[in-house]
Length: 140
Image 1 (cartoon, rainbow, N blue to C red):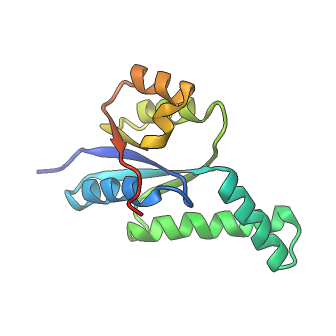
Image 2: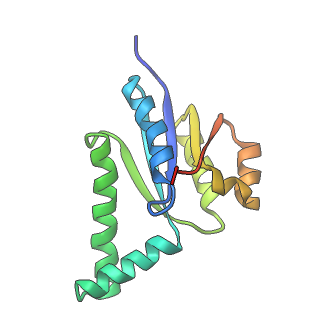
């Protein structure tokens, strides 16, 4: 029997990626599929700038290399079988995530707990066409 479960996992690399990724990995382990959407928040953008400086690269080149490595790192967690997208953490991010859920026929969306406190995310969660899993903050 084929598992048609498909989850979209939203992660912010420096803050809470582990909890949402674990949920996505569980779905994949059950025979489903996952898409990972990486939110580029302030800490990640700062990391890109630091990487560019340390490698003596222009910011645009450092960003391209950093994001490519980041996407590859997340993809490798799923043996390269799952899709990874990079998205700036801005006002329209929640809309993009939930629009994608509809286009990809997702069966669930998993987001970090901290996002639910934001007005745009709270509204998107309330209007979601699929169940939303609120992942707890990563244990210290």
